[in-house]
Image 1 (cartoon, rainbow, N blue to C red):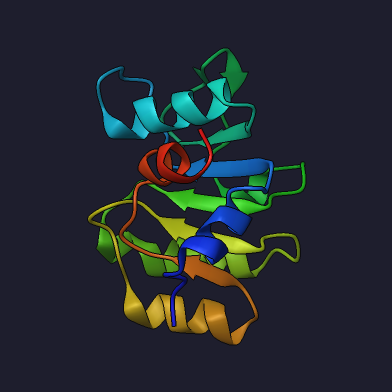
Image 2 (cartoon, rainbow, N blue to C red; image 1 turned 90 degrees about the vertical axis):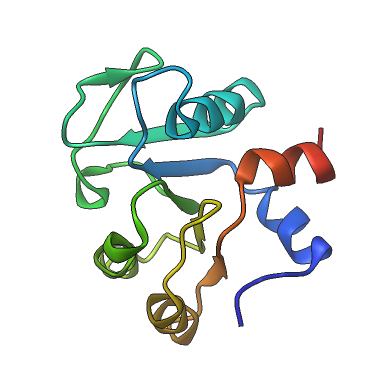
Length: 136
């Protein structure tokens, strides 16, 4: 079962490094404004987008496989039909503890695979909203 309890979500929000797949360079888009908020609140945000070179003054990587640093949470801002492939890429890494799909994004089958591998899963929730509710 994906994480639903307030206590578990609060615990996940204690992680520090978040790779944001689908991070956008366009202000006003949720895929830009949410990671910017997280960065401003002390998280180490790693933008992942094959069509950008720099976002928030940070180097952007093309894929999760290109991230050299350890990742705690993979936050997904891609359509639901792309989640399965992203989850598979996250599962190839030993360091990813949680896979989080943003509001309106979910793939129950991919979530079940991630949970079977011992990873936490949050689906269809905005990380910024949850942070504001539980931490800020």
